[in-house]
Every structure is written in C-alpha cells, then in structure tokens.
Image (cartoon, rainbow, N blue to C red):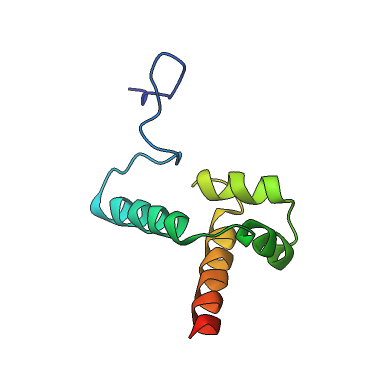
Length: 89
C-alpha cells in the first residue's frame, strides 16, 4: 500500500519532507525544528561556504530529509550555531 503524498489537495503538515514513523524520527524532526529556530540571518551563507554548495541547494537539502546532502548541511548548520554561541560567550 502506498503512502500518502503531499499534494495541493493534501496540505503539508510540516516544512520538512519527513513523516515520523517512530520515536527516533520524531526526535530527529524536533532537532531540525530547534536548529531552524536557532538559525539566524546569514547562516545559510556560512553553510554554503563550508560545504561548497549553492545557497538554494543548502536550504532544500535541509528541508528534504532523504536528500543526498542533508546530513552534511545539518552538521554544518549545527557547527555554525555552536561557533556563534561560543563567540558570544
């Protein structure tokens, strides 16, 4: 049986292309939402420079959980946020 696909008739429940099927995926989705809340203006540009991808691809990779570069982008964004917090201290 096929899974439901987000279309015009079935609006998306989340910005992320991930429907959590277990606790681990739900926690990962919460982590992504937290990262997105901590992200500031210019962070996509820093991530773009860190992993040598265009800014649009960086954003799309972050929201598309099953895309090839998703985990690279998430790791780089975590690093940018961590570095900013350390510099503020």
